[in-house]
Image 1 (tube, rainbow, N blue to C red):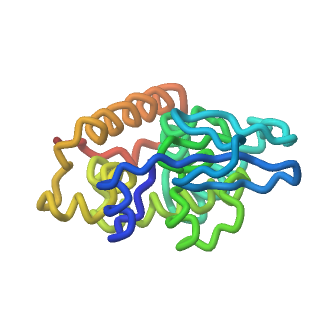
Image 2: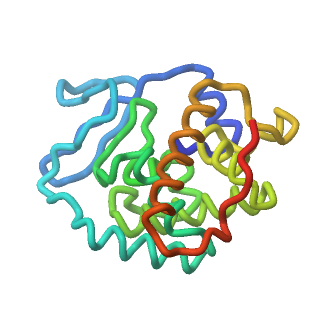
Length: 199
């Protein structure tokens, strides 16, 4: 889940509110924590029942390259984050309400001025921008940047600029780094982005 690192998100996380979601016949996404319609669903990540087909993998790769070049983030790292966040499902919604390929929280999407976080290009551009911002905030340290992407920069700062001791965040970093290394092993791309991971 991408955390916005702001007070509202921390309050929402503390409250552990369940997010219920459905897509109506016009393709409009509805979200609430108090469902009033039998079409709302809760629980783990699921595929939205929309009429849109799955985004072509080639298009996703092109968007990754575009976003990575614009925000100076290794495209292999972006790909690894997408793999862990949504397994390349642009319709994915988490039980906490994170949306799309890079699992942007609604608050984060609004801050990034993303009108439709289910749109693959918009989601990747916004998510990569946010990831680049987190990496820059923590001087390019991958472990801290990924921790901030997952748990929010406020929590990293509160942990004295170390990885917060949350099992979910520690596991998240390990998963992303596993896929990142795997993608690097199969690519001729320079390893100039790879920095030491510390816990």
